[in-house]
Length: 218
Ligand SMILES: [Fe+2]
Image (cartoon, rainbow, N blue to C red; front, side, top):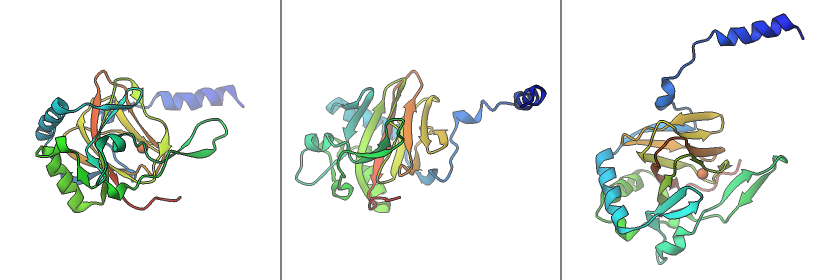
């Protein structure tokens, strides 16, 4: 331990230029990838207005609201709406991982909920399903100054931002990025530990589709 060396060490960091620009854009890594597929953001927003006029979001957790876009055959939207689905988390300073809730058969969520039929979301659902094994699809709304739990899911997800702000961030493992709402489609490997947070003044709205691959066992 040396006073002068410690002072010098900190000075070497102080003299570095701090990047305040790139955080307002997307920066991917192996866990968050912008795909080539793209949708029309204006049509998505119009469709959201249509759907919102006919249905109500269900509050899944404090400041976190969900609207189910798909349901299982022979089941009501209401019963499927209550599903949180299996996730794994570490809750306390024991750092021990625990499993919460029940495993959901994602592959059985093949039916589009009535209010979405005939809207641009039906086109999106069709295009996604033609390419990937799409399970549950939901519109997830996050209030201002709100954040999800720190957890991992059994399967990865597709995120399509509809409304966002620069303070809305997605974190997977050690990586954090903003996802702009410009029609882009993002693969988020939520099999890694992750959370989503909205540190902005306005609500954030994403279309989130579960990829119905078999449960990932680390
Ligand atoms: Fe998750």
